[in-house]
Image (cartoon, rainbow, N blue to C red; front, side):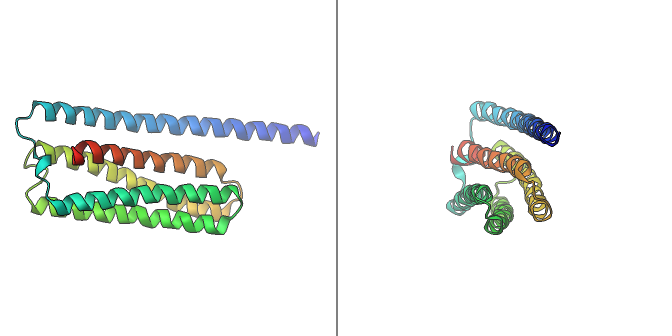
Length: 194
């Protein structure tokens, strides 16, 4: 009797994990479609524009963008490290790496704000030209998702301290955070570099 209940519980947990993963895939697909639509609009505007301003970004804002890219890549690495440590039952070190990820996410937002201020002071504003409008729209939307990701990481940190079963939450939060890293790389390469 006990074995039957345990097997039903395991199947229920596996089913719940599948449903949660599928739900996160749907959420990420929706967000991806939003960014694809915006990046497509960017491509159309850029092709039709006689003069595009992204080539005029000075070296300091470009350096800030590179640093920001390194920070978000590092945050994905620290979250991945946290996941690996949880798999080996090293919860204390894993929680430290989640905290590092939160700190790196906050650093990303601070650097992004600094980048916006520098660009605005250089005349690269949301109203100055199409390139500025596209950049601020894409990076602002991405920043909003980073804020959501930071809240998810903070929630995960508290969840892990309170409950023993956190594999599903770790996986879903990781999917969201790594997705944000990929989105930033696409924005960085397509809008800032080119």
